[in-house]
Image (cartoon, rainbow, N blue to C red; front, side, top):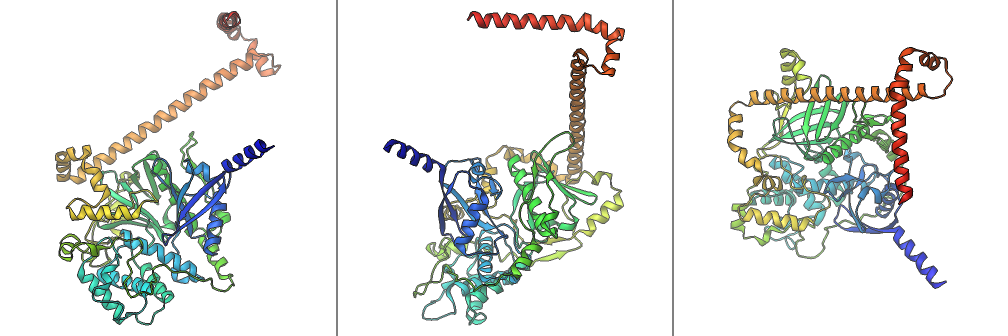
Length: 564
């Protein structure tokens, strides 16, 4: 009896899995779920812990054993999606950024979105000009430490916080000045609301970048925002397509295609898994922001004709339904436990950032050149020519129509620096403290701080520098030649696939016809075929000898098997 109970308890323990979810304030929520539990069950547990009702904007992100990031699908088993051994580690993040975050019904929802955008600002995903950067940092400072108090906040107190990937003493003084003179009297909730209103106006609001390359091999970041599809390349936003103008998205291997009217944008992800993740994110974002009702959601396939491909269906509510549901919420506002409000006389350091005050100030001035000093403005340049990736349809457009399409697009200058968010090429979750200290030490030693730059430094691409210089002398010719080669290759592959499928279908139909005619099936059609001289000749000269040969081989194999 005791052994039976012990075996039963061990089986129940094996059915349970430990999960740890890192929240937006860097605290952790741990729970135990059964192995067959769906993602919706874990997400509901988490939202109940956070006392969150407007939960459709959020999701759970994890990393598979191949270091590829994914969003947890709520209709599938947690264990089958993670494909790793427990305990499982995941992250709670904003998945769909609100179109108007200030219009969110509950303060707890606004606070969580505030934490996410604060992370975006810190990791370099949200870029802005210097004045906006100082104002956003001032709002964060006011929300975290309250009004300026000379007794509690000595000279240089704003340098204790790390709001951006890197910034200068001049920006620190500007932040402190705004905090002292302009934000006094604002409550944490009011500061967070003003922060959200300001962040919403920025070009890179809601950007979750996916690193890719265009057809010429130039790096680019693809993103899906509340307003449409965005491509960031170099220091410009080279493409912005509204959701109602996106006709279709699909992927094949590492190649991602976005169809917009007569234009097809083509980009290449690092791996097929990354490209599939990019495609699924695009399908979900378009359904969430574009559709009026969740009943309009359809299953989307990435396949071509004759090939199954990947099928995906967005399973949640759409933005309009979420807003209508939020308007019906009637309850007492839940209590919010804000992180970072330290009542002591010492200045707190931000919870997820390294303290740069440990580096000598003179050396820090030399190392940390302000990224925000270079971001003079977020301006639209209607006269500049966008960098366009090759498309299938561009080659077939008249030159005048193509030039009009290019001139109608607007290219936004987002910074004087290359857009390179620090953690967009890293899996989530990461050991953020060790990562940021590692990046800081690389900057101090003069090494490149970009993970992407360092990983490419020792690759064969470095040996191709002379060829790249030659291609740079005639970039238009190289780009057109590369695009034409891609189109030819895709056409050849399509023809070969169609030919292979056609031959296979004909072979299967021939075998089926032979089997039916040789059977005893009494159908007039097959009876007429059997009476023809051609069928009799085929039957006696080919089919019967082949059947006898197979029968002989089968008897021989059976005799060997029985003898052994």
